[in-house]
Length: 203
Image (cartoon, rainbow, N blue to C red; front, side):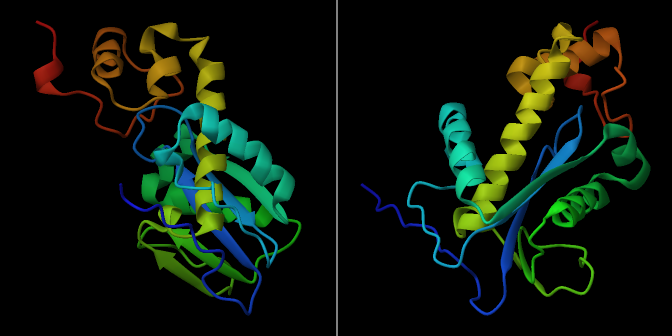
Protein backbone atom coordinates (compact mmCIF):
# COMPACT_ATOMS: atom_id res chain seq x y z
CA UNK A 1 0.00 0.00 0.00
CA UNK A 2 1.33 3.43 -0.95
CA UNK A 3 2.16 5.61 2.04
CA UNK A 4 0.01 8.73 2.39
CA UNK A 5 2.27 11.76 2.71
CA UNK A 6 0.72 14.54 4.83
CA UNK A 7 0.43 17.93 3.17
CA UNK A 8 2.85 20.66 4.20
CA UNK A 9 1.67 23.55 6.34
CA UNK A 10 3.48 26.42 4.60
CA UNK A 11 5.64 27.20 1.60
CA UNK A 12 7.55 29.86 3.56
CA UNK A 13 7.49 30.87 7.22
CA UNK A 14 8.25 34.60 7.22
CA UNK A 15 5.02 36.09 5.85
CA UNK A 16 1.32 35.43 6.40
CA UNK A 17 0.46 33.03 3.60
CA UNK A 18 -2.77 32.54 1.67
CA UNK A 19 -3.40 29.50 -0.50
CA UNK A 20 -5.55 29.98 -3.62
CA UNK A 21 -7.30 27.62 -5.99
CA UNK A 22 -10.24 27.65 -8.40
CA UNK A 23 -13.04 25.33 -9.48
CA UNK A 24 -15.09 25.18 -12.66
CA UNK A 25 -12.51 26.26 -15.17
CA UNK A 26 -13.40 23.56 -17.69
CA UNK A 27 -17.18 23.82 -17.37
CA UNK A 28 -19.58 24.80 -20.13
CA UNK A 29 -21.99 26.51 -17.73
CA UNK A 30 -21.91 28.47 -14.51
CA UNK A 31 -19.33 30.77 -12.92
CA UNK A 32 -15.76 29.93 -12.07
CA UNK A 33 -15.23 30.01 -8.30
CA UNK A 34 -12.02 30.62 -6.35
CA UNK A 35 -11.08 30.61 -2.70
CA UNK A 36 -8.29 32.02 -0.56
CA UNK A 37 -7.42 30.43 2.79
CA UNK A 38 -5.11 31.65 5.54
CA UNK A 39 -4.27 29.19 8.30
CA UNK A 40 -2.65 29.94 11.69
CA UNK A 41 1.11 29.52 11.72
CA UNK A 42 0.96 26.29 13.71
CA UNK A 43 -1.91 24.75 11.74
CA UNK A 44 -1.84 21.08 10.83
CA UNK A 45 -4.53 18.74 9.55
CA UNK A 46 -3.61 15.24 8.34
CA UNK A 47 -6.99 14.73 6.65
CA UNK A 48 -6.98 17.73 4.31
CA UNK A 49 -6.23 16.87 0.70
CA UNK A 50 -6.89 17.89 -2.89
CA UNK A 51 -10.65 18.16 -3.37
CA UNK A 52 -10.49 15.89 -6.43
CA UNK A 53 -9.27 13.04 -4.21
CA UNK A 54 -12.19 13.35 -1.77
CA UNK A 55 -15.81 12.26 -1.93
CA UNK A 56 -18.53 14.93 -1.87
CA UNK A 57 -19.39 13.90 1.70
CA UNK A 58 -15.79 14.33 2.86
CA UNK A 59 -15.45 17.65 1.05
CA UNK A 60 -18.48 19.07 2.83
CA UNK A 61 -17.31 17.77 6.20
CA UNK A 62 -13.89 19.34 5.67
CA UNK A 63 -15.45 22.61 4.50
CA UNK A 64 -16.94 23.04 7.98
CA UNK A 65 -13.55 22.28 9.56
CA UNK A 66 -11.75 24.75 7.27
CA UNK A 67 -14.23 27.55 7.93
CA UNK A 68 -13.99 26.95 11.68
CA UNK A 69 -10.22 26.59 11.96
CA UNK A 70 -8.84 28.96 9.31
CA UNK A 71 -7.46 32.27 10.44
CA UNK A 72 -9.37 33.71 7.48
CA UNK A 73 -10.99 32.51 4.26
CA UNK A 74 -12.99 33.92 1.37
CA UNK A 75 -14.79 32.55 -1.69
CA UNK A 76 -15.52 34.57 -4.83
CA UNK A 77 -16.77 33.95 -8.35
CA UNK A 78 -16.75 35.32 -11.89
CA UNK A 79 -19.93 34.93 -13.91
CA UNK A 80 -20.37 33.18 -17.24
CA UNK A 81 -20.98 36.56 -18.86
CA UNK A 82 -17.69 37.90 -17.49
CA UNK A 83 -15.89 34.72 -18.59
CA UNK A 84 -17.14 35.29 -22.14
CA UNK A 85 -15.90 38.87 -22.02
CA UNK A 86 -12.39 38.34 -20.62
CA UNK A 87 -11.74 34.59 -21.25
CA UNK A 88 -11.57 31.77 -18.72
CA UNK A 89 -7.88 32.19 -17.91
CA UNK A 90 -8.27 35.83 -16.88
CA UNK A 91 -11.55 35.00 -15.14
CA UNK A 92 -9.82 32.38 -12.98
CA UNK A 93 -7.21 34.90 -11.88
CA UNK A 94 -9.91 37.53 -11.30
CA UNK A 95 -11.88 35.14 -9.08
CA UNK A 96 -8.73 34.55 -6.99
CA UNK A 97 -8.10 38.29 -6.76
CA UNK A 98 -11.67 38.85 -5.62
CA UNK A 99 -11.28 36.20 -2.93
CA UNK A 100 -8.03 37.83 -1.76
CA UNK A 101 -9.81 41.21 -1.70
CA UNK A 102 -12.38 39.76 0.69
CA UNK A 103 -9.91 38.55 3.31
CA UNK A 104 -10.20 40.48 6.56
CA UNK A 105 -6.73 39.27 7.52
CA UNK A 106 -4.74 40.35 4.45
CA UNK A 107 -2.25 37.96 2.95
CA UNK A 108 1.43 38.86 2.78
CA UNK A 109 2.41 35.96 0.52
CA UNK A 110 0.33 33.93 -1.94
CA UNK A 111 0.70 30.34 -3.07
CA UNK A 112 -1.38 29.29 -6.07
CA UNK A 113 -2.21 25.91 -7.55
CA UNK A 114 -0.86 25.65 -11.09
CA UNK A 115 1.92 27.23 -13.10
CA UNK A 116 0.54 30.70 -13.84
CA UNK A 117 -0.89 33.64 -11.94
CA UNK A 118 -1.53 37.33 -12.48
CA UNK A 119 0.21 39.29 -9.69
CA UNK A 120 -2.08 40.52 -6.95
CA UNK A 121 -1.24 44.07 -5.87
CA UNK A 122 2.46 43.99 -5.01
CA UNK A 123 2.44 40.76 -3.01
CA UNK A 124 5.05 38.06 -3.62
CA UNK A 125 3.68 34.73 -4.79
CA UNK A 126 4.64 31.25 -5.92
CA UNK A 127 2.86 29.01 -8.42
CA UNK A 128 2.97 25.36 -7.42
CA UNK A 129 2.06 22.62 -9.88
CA UNK A 130 -0.33 20.19 -8.17
CA UNK A 131 -0.16 22.45 -5.15
CA UNK A 132 -3.56 21.26 -3.95
CA UNK A 133 -1.89 17.94 -3.19
CA UNK A 134 1.13 19.51 -1.49
CA UNK A 135 0.05 22.40 0.75
CA UNK A 136 -2.78 22.59 3.27
CA UNK A 137 -3.98 26.08 2.39
CA UNK A 138 -4.22 25.32 -1.34
CA UNK A 139 -6.03 22.05 -0.62
CA UNK A 140 -8.44 23.93 1.64
CA UNK A 141 -9.01 26.54 -1.07
CA UNK A 142 -9.73 23.77 -3.59
CA UNK A 143 -12.33 22.28 -1.24
CA UNK A 144 -14.06 25.60 -0.60
CA UNK A 145 -14.11 26.59 -4.27
CA UNK A 146 -15.45 23.17 -5.28
CA UNK A 147 -18.18 22.92 -2.64
CA UNK A 148 -19.41 26.49 -3.11
CA UNK A 149 -19.55 26.03 -6.87
CA UNK A 150 -21.32 22.69 -6.59
CA UNK A 151 -23.97 24.30 -4.37
CA UNK A 152 -24.45 27.07 -6.91
CA UNK A 153 -24.91 24.56 -9.73
CA UNK A 154 -27.36 22.52 -7.65
CA UNK A 155 -29.45 25.65 -7.12
CA UNK A 156 -29.64 26.62 -10.79
CA UNK A 157 -30.19 22.99 -11.85
CA UNK A 158 -33.74 23.36 -10.59
CA UNK A 159 -34.38 25.88 -13.37
CA UNK A 160 -32.95 23.66 -16.11
CA UNK A 161 -33.14 19.97 -15.12
CA UNK A 162 -32.75 18.84 -18.72
CA UNK A 163 -29.01 19.68 -18.67
CA UNK A 164 -28.32 17.30 -15.76
CA UNK A 165 -26.33 19.85 -13.75
CA UNK A 166 -27.15 17.96 -10.54
CA UNK A 167 -24.82 15.26 -11.82
CA UNK A 168 -22.34 17.04 -14.08
CA UNK A 169 -22.13 20.48 -12.38
CA UNK A 170 -21.82 22.06 -15.84
CA UNK A 171 -18.90 19.98 -17.06
CA UNK A 172 -19.02 18.77 -20.69
CA UNK A 173 -20.46 15.31 -20.26
CA UNK A 174 -22.11 13.61 -23.22
CA UNK A 175 -25.56 14.18 -21.72
CA UNK A 176 -24.85 17.87 -21.19
CA UNK A 177 -23.47 18.36 -24.70
CA UNK A 178 -26.39 16.51 -26.27
CA UNK A 179 -28.85 18.67 -24.30
CA UNK A 180 -27.14 21.78 -25.68
CA UNK A 181 -27.32 20.41 -29.23
CA UNK A 182 -31.03 19.67 -28.82
CA UNK A 183 -32.18 22.60 -26.70
CA UNK A 184 -29.59 25.34 -27.14
CA UNK A 185 -27.89 27.47 -24.52
CA UNK A 186 -29.26 28.94 -21.29
CA UNK A 187 -28.25 32.31 -19.80
CA UNK A 188 -25.94 30.31 -17.50
CA UNK A 189 -23.86 28.89 -20.35
CA UNK A 190 -20.49 30.25 -21.42
CA UNK A 191 -21.25 31.21 -24.97
CA UNK A 192 -17.64 31.49 -26.12
CA UNK A 193 -16.91 27.86 -25.18
CA UNK A 194 -17.00 25.15 -27.83
CA UNK A 195 -20.04 23.17 -26.81
CA UNK A 196 -20.64 20.99 -29.87
CA UNK A 197 -18.85 17.88 -31.00
CA UNK A 198 -19.51 16.29 -34.43
CA UNK A 199 -19.31 12.83 -32.86
CA UNK A 200 -22.20 13.70 -30.56
CA UNK A 201 -24.53 15.22 -33.13
CA UNK A 202 -27.88 13.52 -33.49
CA UNK A 203 -28.99 13.08 -37.12
